[in-house]
Image (cartoon, rainbow, N blue to C red):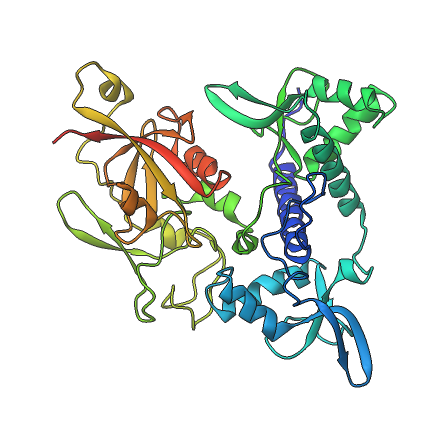
Length: 413
């Protein structure tokens, strides 16, 4: 059976990212419709409702459905979608780079934080309908159709003790496509499935196989109805980063807003304080300007600097799953509910089988929920994870909801 090549995986990841940018841009543009059949969920950012997008007159000419760049940057900061103007500019530049927005006269190829007029391309009919966009729109249409029916083939299924959302069998999807008149025959259905996989819309649950007419388990990689945070647009290299970094890249937080502070404090069990490079969950490859308070110098776009962060395990000795689960073991299980903020959850996971809490931000959501270093991660949002490595746990957290429910095992002192 054909396995996915590294080149195909990379291509699918790139398409997946572009799809996420399109969804985030559309959620920013649309007003709240309230209709469950809407192609996108009611947007968090209601630019039309907020009167930011409207007809504007300049030099005796009226420009329909446009916004002032400076006003939008203000709005992003006021609604906590960007921590500062620099980040707001970078976010909107992402939308320009992906042909979501443009200057009304196309006189500026970059997004300027000034009294200049910009417009969403879908508001003036200039959004390019390329082949890739058409595949994305087809995948979105199929997804909406599948999640809107009562007896959907999309289900929560388990493989290798890991639960996956929005899953389906390859042959099951093909049967459904033919039944619904989406394709004429099984060969056409396979070709459609392969196009969706190559464009990062669906994926084999272990990302090892292409799409086949078989009982292999796949899932929708994109949850079209999930509300995006704009800062996710700056996570272009997050998939690669997860596999390269020895620490979870999604949990470190800025300790406080003081401009001179660029450190994250990791409290060890012996009360020693270590200084760790500050990286934000929502901006792995972003915020690299010299004026940004999160970095004392511009970071690189890959993860070697983070690899140096707290390289030594906080555990005094290795602990096995058998030791944790044995009757009478000196460990107690605790359930923590952590509500992430715009920066993250405020902790670092490391190790594997079992994973442990390597660092906790004293001022972050995790610390407030009772998380401590040296706790072992038992489950994440109901998924048993003692047998998983930190990359898989990182993925479960990053693709899950903002409210994180974790079971941890803590040594009884």
